[in-house]
Length: 310
Image (cartoon, rainbow, N blue to C red):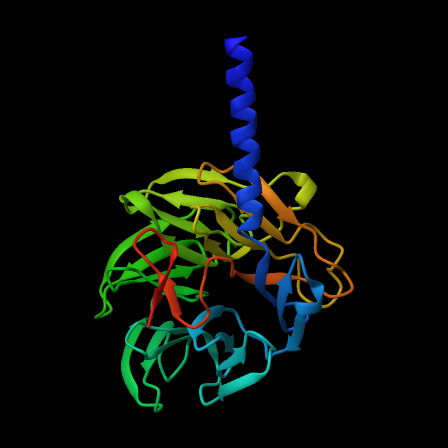
């Protein structure tokens, strides 16, 4: 009887955890690369949803005052989260790969073979358009997303490797990823115990790297969700990882795969979302909004979770 009671308590706790994990992922900002679209989705109230066409680009970020920063190929736009209305546009930087607002209020723009420099270029721009700092890594021929760490360094994905630069452009850490020759790694975030988690693109998994660059853990989803390309992700407030499972270029992938996947830190897939093929094609970026206040700027903290800044 005692064993039975213990088992029942365990089942109830497990069910409660699953319910909390679902309740933490009901409101999303989604970037659909296939349709060049950004949308707001409330899983419990579809009347609140909106869908807005945007220029091609790579990233999303909450930047305060109820707005989301949307990277474009020429800079960025800022959209109102309640309506999708464009509040601001900066389009002076053709060839930009992504944009990211920093704690100091400047915007980090990233490009490749850009601004008259070879390789990866990181350029910090003030709100008045003044160029404040440029970092250059000419030995690399690929870049996707860049994330600032809590220490003020940058984690940069460069196809088969991820590396860390200090504020002066010195490479202080580097790790090779596991996978095919063409990985197209997407995003890296520093998490607890000085580990780094990377969404690996065409390697179709999360790779967790140790301080020495060695592989700690690797995991992916089951075939039922059709893992194809792990792209933009978020470390949720409960410590889980929510990733966009991109399915392909163009407008005809809405029926393919479950395009949002949530994993525990141990790599167990506990939740997935099957998108409406009439409204989506291929998701590449996601922000889960529950527990966040869009009136603040959010940047990854020392545990990888989004932390608000004024």
